[in-house]
Amino acid sequence: MLPRESVAPSRSLGFQGFRHYRVSAVFAGLAALAPSRAFAAEETHPYAECTHEASDADLTAAKAAFQAGNVSFNEADYPRAILYWEDAFRRDCTAHPLLLNLARAYELNGQKRQAVVSLETFLEREPNSPERAQIQRRIEVLKKQLDSEQAPPPPAAPPPPGPTQTAPAKPAEQRQGPVNLSEHPKSPQVLPLVVAGVGAAVFVVGGLIYLDNANKVKEFEKTCGEEHNMCPRGYDYGPANKAAGRETAGGITSLVGLPILAGGLIWYFVASSPSKSTTAVVTPTVAPGFYGVALNSRF
Image (cartoon, rainbow, N blue to C red):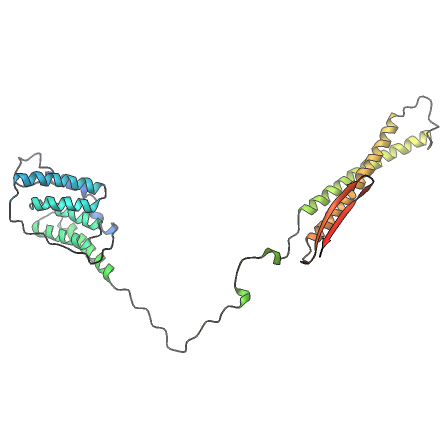
Protein backbone atom coordinates (compact mmCIF):
# COMPACT_ATOMS: atom_id res chain seq x y z
CA MET A 1 0.00 0.00 0.00
CA LEU A 2 1.86 2.96 -1.28
CA PRO A 3 0.70 6.62 -1.52
CA ARG A 4 -0.62 7.84 -4.84
CA GLU A 5 2.28 8.99 -6.97
CA SER A 6 0.14 11.57 -8.75
CA VAL A 7 -1.18 13.16 -5.55
CA ALA A 8 0.77 14.96 -2.87
CA PRO A 9 1.19 12.92 0.32
CA SER A 10 -1.63 13.45 2.79
CA ARG A 11 -2.66 12.24 6.20
CA SER A 12 -4.80 9.52 4.61
CA LEU A 13 -3.19 6.24 3.64
CA GLY A 14 -4.39 6.32 0.03
CA PHE A 15 -2.26 3.28 -0.93
CA GLN A 16 -1.89 4.32 -4.56
CA GLY A 17 -5.60 4.01 -5.22
CA PHE A 18 -5.16 0.47 -3.89
CA ARG A 19 -3.58 -0.65 -7.13
CA HIS A 20 -1.32 -2.86 -5.04
CA TYR A 21 -4.42 -4.15 -3.37
CA ARG A 22 -5.83 -4.98 -6.80
CA VAL A 23 -2.84 -7.25 -7.41
CA SER A 24 -3.50 -9.05 -4.15
CA ALA A 25 -7.26 -9.38 -4.60
CA VAL A 26 -7.42 -9.99 -8.35
CA PHE A 27 -9.24 -13.23 -7.69
CA ALA A 28 -11.90 -11.66 -5.52
CA GLY A 29 -14.63 -12.37 -8.07
CA LEU A 30 -14.00 -16.11 -7.72
CA ALA A 31 -15.12 -16.26 -4.12
CA ALA A 32 -17.71 -18.94 -4.75
CA LEU A 33 -15.06 -21.27 -6.16
CA ALA A 34 -12.43 -20.78 -3.47
CA PRO A 35 -11.80 -23.83 -1.23
CA SER A 36 -12.85 -23.45 2.37
CA ARG A 37 -11.81 -25.08 5.61
CA ALA A 38 -14.33 -25.73 8.35
CA PHE A 39 -13.62 -24.18 11.74
CA ALA A 40 -15.67 -25.03 14.79
CA ALA A 41 -17.44 -22.06 16.37
CA GLU A 42 -15.86 -19.39 14.21
CA GLU A 43 -15.50 -16.13 16.07
CA THR A 44 -16.00 -12.75 14.41
CA HIS A 45 -15.13 -9.21 15.39
CA PRO A 46 -16.56 -5.90 14.25
CA TYR A 47 -14.49 -2.98 13.04
CA ALA A 48 -14.45 0.07 15.29
CA GLU A 49 -15.75 3.36 14.02
CA CYS A 50 -13.11 5.49 12.31
CA THR A 51 -12.95 8.54 14.59
CA HIS A 52 -9.29 9.46 14.47
CA GLU A 53 -6.83 10.70 11.90
CA ALA A 54 -3.69 8.68 11.25
CA SER A 55 -0.40 10.24 12.24
CA ASP A 56 2.71 10.19 10.10
CA ALA A 57 4.08 7.34 12.17
CA ASP A 58 0.82 5.42 11.72
CA LEU A 59 0.94 5.95 7.95
CA THR A 60 4.52 4.71 7.73
CA ALA A 61 3.73 1.64 9.85
CA ALA A 62 0.55 0.97 7.87
CA LYS A 63 2.45 1.03 4.58
CA ALA A 64 5.00 -1.45 5.91
CA ALA A 65 2.28 -3.73 7.28
CA PHE A 66 0.42 -3.61 3.98
CA GLN A 67 3.52 -4.61 2.00
CA ALA A 68 4.26 -7.43 4.45
CA GLY A 69 0.66 -8.64 4.11
CA ASN A 70 1.04 -8.66 0.32
CA VAL A 71 4.09 -10.91 0.58
CA SER A 72 2.34 -13.32 2.96
CA PHE A 73 -0.80 -13.41 0.80
CA ASN A 74 1.20 -14.21 -2.34
CA GLU A 75 2.86 -17.05 -0.40
CA ALA A 76 -0.62 -18.36 0.57
CA ASP A 77 0.15 -17.64 4.23
CA TYR A 78 -3.32 -16.22 4.85
CA PRO A 79 -3.25 -16.07 8.68
CA ARG A 80 -0.09 -13.94 8.59
CA ALA A 81 -1.50 -11.75 5.81
CA ILE A 82 -4.60 -11.16 7.96
CA LEU A 83 -2.46 -10.08 10.91
CA TYR A 84 -0.53 -7.58 8.79
CA TRP A 85 -3.58 -6.13 7.05
CA GLU A 86 -5.61 -5.89 10.27
CA ASP A 87 -2.71 -3.95 11.79
CA ALA A 88 -2.52 -1.67 8.72
CA PHE A 89 -6.28 -0.96 8.87
CA ARG A 90 -6.14 -0.33 12.62
CA ARG A 91 -3.44 2.30 12.04
CA ASP A 92 -5.26 3.96 9.09
CA CYS A 93 -8.99 3.27 9.29
CA THR A 94 -9.62 5.49 6.27
CA ALA A 95 -8.04 2.91 3.94
CA HIS A 96 -11.40 1.22 3.35
CA PRO A 97 -10.27 -0.98 0.40
CA LEU A 98 -8.16 -2.89 2.90
CA LEU A 99 -11.45 -4.45 4.04
CA LEU A 100 -11.74 -6.10 0.64
CA ASN A 101 -8.23 -7.49 1.02
CA LEU A 102 -9.12 -8.80 4.45
CA ALA A 103 -12.37 -10.35 3.19
CA ARG A 104 -10.48 -12.29 0.54
CA ALA A 105 -7.83 -13.48 3.02
CA TYR A 106 -10.47 -14.51 5.57
CA GLU A 107 -12.39 -16.40 2.92
CA LEU A 108 -9.32 -18.31 1.75
CA ASN A 109 -8.49 -19.07 5.38
CA GLY A 110 -11.91 -20.66 5.88
CA GLN A 111 -13.32 -17.79 7.99
CA LYS A 112 -16.33 -16.95 5.86
CA ARG A 113 -18.31 -15.21 8.63
CA GLN A 114 -15.53 -12.68 9.18
CA ALA A 115 -15.24 -12.27 5.41
CA VAL A 116 -18.92 -11.26 5.34
CA VAL A 117 -18.30 -8.78 8.20
CA SER A 118 -15.41 -7.21 6.27
CA LEU A 119 -17.46 -6.86 3.07
CA GLU A 120 -20.50 -5.41 4.85
CA THR A 121 -18.30 -2.93 6.70
CA PHE A 122 -16.77 -1.81 3.42
CA LEU A 123 -20.24 -1.16 1.92
CA GLU A 124 -21.21 0.83 5.02
CA ARG A 125 -18.16 3.06 4.73
CA GLU A 126 -18.10 3.23 0.91
CA PRO A 127 -21.83 3.35 -0.01
CA ASN A 128 -21.10 4.81 -3.44
CA SER A 129 -18.49 2.24 -4.45
CA PRO A 130 -18.73 1.30 -8.18
CA GLU A 131 -18.19 -2.33 -7.11
CA ARG A 132 -21.19 -2.36 -4.77
CA ALA A 133 -23.28 -4.80 -6.84
CA GLN A 134 -20.40 -7.23 -7.22
CA ILE A 135 -19.61 -7.10 -3.49
CA GLN A 136 -23.26 -7.71 -2.58
CA ARG A 137 -23.27 -10.80 -4.77
CA ARG A 138 -20.16 -12.03 -2.98
CA ILE A 139 -21.89 -11.55 0.36
CA GLU A 140 -24.93 -13.52 -0.82
CA VAL A 141 -22.76 -16.37 -2.07
CA LEU A 142 -20.84 -16.57 1.18
CA LYS A 143 -24.04 -16.57 3.25
CA LYS A 144 -25.51 -19.38 1.12
CA GLN A 145 -22.35 -21.39 1.63
CA LEU A 146 -22.57 -20.84 5.38
CA ASP A 147 -26.22 -21.91 5.43
CA SER A 148 -25.47 -25.08 3.47
CA GLU A 149 -22.57 -25.95 5.76
CA GLN A 150 -24.73 -25.56 8.86
CA ALA A 151 -27.84 -27.27 7.53
CA PRO A 152 -28.40 -30.60 9.32
CA PRO A 153 -28.51 -33.69 7.13
CA PRO A 154 -32.00 -34.86 6.15
CA PRO A 155 -33.38 -37.54 8.47
CA ALA A 156 -33.28 -41.08 7.23
CA ALA A 157 -36.55 -42.38 5.88
CA PRO A 158 -38.23 -44.82 8.31
CA PRO A 159 -38.55 -48.42 7.13
CA PRO A 160 -41.95 -49.38 5.69
CA PRO A 161 -44.32 -51.02 8.18
CA GLY A 162 -44.55 -54.76 8.06
CA PRO A 163 -42.83 -57.86 9.35
CA THR A 164 -39.09 -57.73 9.35
CA GLN A 165 -37.69 -59.80 6.57
CA THR A 166 -34.21 -61.14 6.67
CA ALA A 167 -32.49 -61.70 3.39
CA PRO A 168 -31.67 -65.39 2.95
CA ALA A 169 -28.04 -66.20 3.30
CA LYS A 170 -26.25 -67.12 0.17
CA PRO A 171 -25.64 -70.82 -0.27
CA ALA A 172 -22.10 -71.87 0.46
CA GLU A 173 -21.50 -72.83 -3.12
CA GLN A 174 -22.26 -69.28 -4.30
CA ARG A 175 -19.60 -67.63 -2.18
CA GLN A 176 -16.61 -66.79 -4.20
CA GLY A 177 -13.15 -67.39 -2.89
CA PRO A 178 -9.65 -68.04 -4.14
CA VAL A 179 -9.62 -70.19 -7.24
CA ASN A 180 -7.97 -73.58 -6.73
CA LEU A 181 -6.50 -74.53 -10.06
CA SER A 182 -6.16 -78.16 -9.04
CA GLU A 183 -9.96 -78.48 -8.94
CA HIS A 184 -10.45 -77.39 -12.53
CA PRO A 185 -10.01 -79.63 -15.54
CA LYS A 186 -6.61 -79.27 -17.10
CA SER A 187 -6.36 -77.67 -20.51
CA PRO A 188 -4.62 -79.59 -23.30
CA GLN A 189 -0.86 -79.30 -23.09
CA VAL A 190 1.12 -77.89 -25.99
CA LEU A 191 4.56 -79.27 -25.16
CA PRO A 192 3.58 -82.95 -25.62
CA LEU A 193 2.22 -82.13 -29.06
CA VAL A 194 5.50 -80.42 -29.94
CA VAL A 195 7.44 -83.50 -28.83
CA ALA A 196 5.12 -85.73 -30.88
CA GLY A 197 5.55 -83.46 -33.90
CA VAL A 198 9.35 -83.61 -33.62
CA GLY A 199 9.19 -87.39 -33.35
CA ALA A 200 6.97 -87.59 -36.42
CA ALA A 201 9.33 -85.37 -38.40
CA VAL A 202 12.37 -87.47 -37.41
CA PHE A 203 10.52 -90.66 -38.28
CA VAL A 204 9.45 -89.39 -41.70
CA VAL A 205 12.82 -87.90 -42.65
CA GLY A 206 14.67 -91.02 -41.52
CA GLY A 207 12.24 -93.21 -43.46
CA LEU A 208 12.70 -91.20 -46.66
CA ILE A 209 16.48 -91.40 -46.39
CA TYR A 210 16.26 -95.13 -45.73
CA LEU A 211 13.95 -95.83 -48.68
CA ASP A 212 15.95 -93.74 -51.16
CA ASN A 213 19.27 -95.36 -50.35
CA ALA A 214 17.71 -98.84 -50.08
CA ASN A 215 16.74 -98.55 -53.76
CA LYS A 216 20.32 -97.59 -54.65
CA VAL A 217 21.65 -100.62 -52.75
CA LYS A 218 19.21 -102.89 -54.61
CA GLU A 219 20.41 -101.53 -57.97
CA PHE A 220 24.02 -102.25 -56.91
CA GLU A 221 23.07 -105.80 -55.94
CA LYS A 222 21.41 -106.32 -59.32
CA THR A 223 24.67 -105.35 -60.99
CA CYS A 224 27.16 -107.09 -58.70
CA GLY A 225 24.99 -109.75 -57.07
CA GLU A 226 24.19 -110.19 -53.43
CA GLU A 227 27.71 -111.45 -52.74
CA HIS A 228 29.23 -108.55 -54.70
CA ASN A 229 31.28 -110.99 -56.77
CA MET A 230 29.78 -110.25 -60.14
CA CYS A 231 30.88 -106.63 -60.48
CA PRO A 232 32.49 -105.70 -63.79
CA ARG A 233 36.22 -105.08 -63.81
CA GLY A 234 37.03 -101.56 -62.61
CA TYR A 235 33.61 -101.02 -61.00
CA ASP A 236 33.46 -98.03 -58.62
CA TYR A 237 32.19 -99.20 -55.20
CA GLY A 238 32.17 -95.68 -53.67
CA PRO A 239 28.53 -94.72 -54.44
CA ALA A 240 27.32 -98.13 -53.31
CA ASN A 241 29.14 -97.87 -50.00
CA LYS A 242 27.74 -94.36 -49.39
CA ALA A 243 24.21 -95.59 -50.19
CA ALA A 244 24.59 -98.49 -47.77
CA GLY A 245 25.77 -96.15 -45.00
CA ARG A 246 22.92 -93.70 -45.60
CA GLU A 247 20.45 -96.58 -45.60
CA THR A 248 21.61 -97.64 -42.17
CA ALA A 249 21.58 -94.05 -40.84
CA GLY A 250 18.09 -93.43 -42.20
CA GLY A 251 16.80 -96.58 -40.57
CA ILE A 252 18.27 -95.64 -37.21
CA THR A 253 16.90 -92.10 -37.50
CA SER A 254 13.43 -93.43 -38.30
CA LEU A 255 13.58 -95.81 -35.31
CA VAL A 256 14.56 -92.92 -33.02
CA GLY A 257 11.66 -90.76 -34.24
CA LEU A 258 9.06 -93.47 -33.71
CA PRO A 259 9.33 -93.71 -29.88
CA ILE A 260 9.53 -89.92 -29.62
CA LEU A 261 6.28 -89.68 -31.57
CA ALA A 262 4.65 -92.32 -29.42
CA GLY A 263 5.94 -90.80 -26.20
CA GLY A 264 4.64 -87.36 -27.12
CA LEU A 265 1.16 -88.74 -27.87
CA ILE A 266 1.06 -90.73 -24.61
CA TRP A 267 2.27 -87.67 -22.69
CA TYR A 268 -0.46 -85.53 -24.27
CA PHE A 269 -3.29 -87.92 -23.41
CA VAL A 270 -2.07 -88.51 -19.86
CA ALA A 271 -1.62 -84.76 -19.18
CA SER A 272 -5.10 -84.02 -20.55
CA SER A 273 -6.76 -86.66 -18.38
CA PRO A 274 -9.05 -85.20 -15.64
CA SER A 275 -8.01 -87.85 -13.14
CA LYS A 276 -6.57 -86.41 -9.93
CA SER A 277 -5.31 -89.61 -8.34
CA THR A 278 -2.83 -90.62 -11.02
CA THR A 279 0.31 -88.84 -12.11
CA ALA A 280 2.24 -90.11 -15.09
CA VAL A 281 5.54 -88.96 -16.52
CA VAL A 282 6.54 -90.13 -19.99
CA THR A 283 10.21 -89.82 -20.94
CA PRO A 284 11.63 -90.80 -24.35
CA THR A 285 14.58 -93.17 -23.86
CA VAL A 286 17.35 -93.74 -26.37
CA ALA A 287 20.32 -96.03 -25.73
CA PRO A 288 22.70 -98.08 -27.87
CA GLY A 289 20.66 -100.88 -29.27
CA PHE A 290 17.41 -99.66 -27.64
CA TYR A 291 14.78 -97.08 -28.59
CA GLY A 292 11.57 -96.56 -26.65
CA VAL A 293 9.81 -94.62 -23.90
CA ALA A 294 9.82 -94.83 -20.12
CA LEU A 295 6.44 -94.44 -18.36
CA ASN A 296 6.53 -93.59 -14.64
CA SER A 297 3.15 -93.55 -12.85
CA ARG A 298 2.24 -92.59 -9.31
CA PHE A 299 -1.14 -93.38 -7.75
